[in-house]
View 1: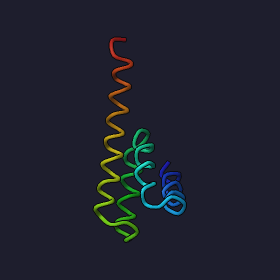
View 2: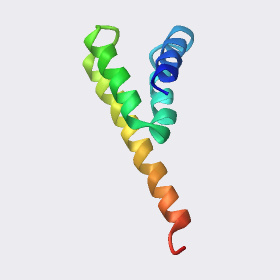
View 3: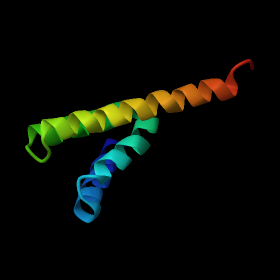
View 4: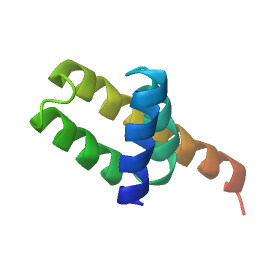
Length: 79
């Protein structure tokens, strides 16, 4: 999954610019928050994105993860 997220980030940045990171973060945050956080942290450390953008990407992934989990809880509540 981590490799897939790295490939998705590289493809998205190449073809759609840095704005694609937010969409990738939202999708991957619903599945695996740690992978997008780790790959974003490595991109910040390597100088490929600035730290402010990295923080926003991780926050988008976190919010997507929380919303997805809340939706699952709401749909399965009472069962």
